[in-house]
Amino acid sequence: MKHQIILFISRILLAVLAVTGTTIEIVKFGPGMFMYYTVLSNLLVSIFSVYMVYAMWQKKDLQSQSFLRIKAAVTMSIMITFVIYHLLLAPIADNFWRIENILCHYIVPLYFFLDTLFVDRGRQYKWFDPICWTALPLAYMAFALLNGLFLKIPIPDAKDSPFAYFFLNVTKYGWQYVLTYAGIIFVAYLVSGYIFYGLKSISLKRFNEKRRSLFILE
Image 1 (cartoon, rainbow, N blue to C red):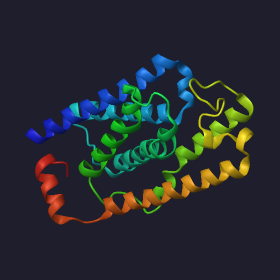
Image 2 (image 1 turned 90 degrees about the vertical axis):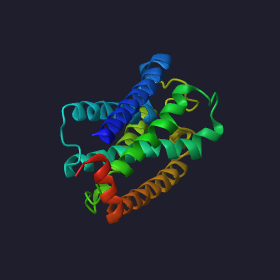
Image 3 (image 1 turned 120 degrees about the horizontal axis):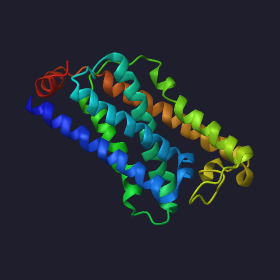
Image 4 (image 1 turned 45 degrees about the vertical axis):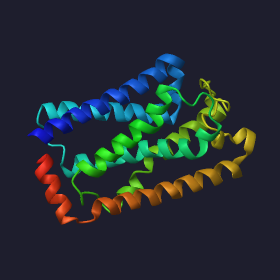
């Protein structure tokens, strides 16, 4: 019971951090921030984290296979926010040390990932799930290109507006440049998905027994 309370408090903190970072981004720069994958993925995590808090309060099952498969998709969708920002965008970012920037790109993604990695029951995913997890980033890329080429909705604080990110700017860099970046990101994302799938598929008897004794989740 003690460890369940700790987990409950931890998820309340996660929800507060996710909602805070997302809210600051939108309030500070306006609704145009919804054009960023970062804000959309953090909004998804915010909703999901709030639901987990509510579900734990209501003593709902958060270890069912269907729930964990959905949560894994959310986990991967927020982790790409961390990876892409850290590797491609942080080095050229202006005003990096903003609280909402750190929350949305580092603290919330890593917090949610660790929650999934260490709390969720293992061996629950299907072999094709990592392929399914690519759906959200691919859908966003299609929308971002549609906006940049046709809708042209302005994006706050984006140097490449109406493209959200420089590696999607077809007008400036051309299709070969954009598709090369997209291909590399897609392959890396898919490989990372299968690595995550592998980590959650390893049968660690001693670890599982210890986790059960701590969280009484199974």
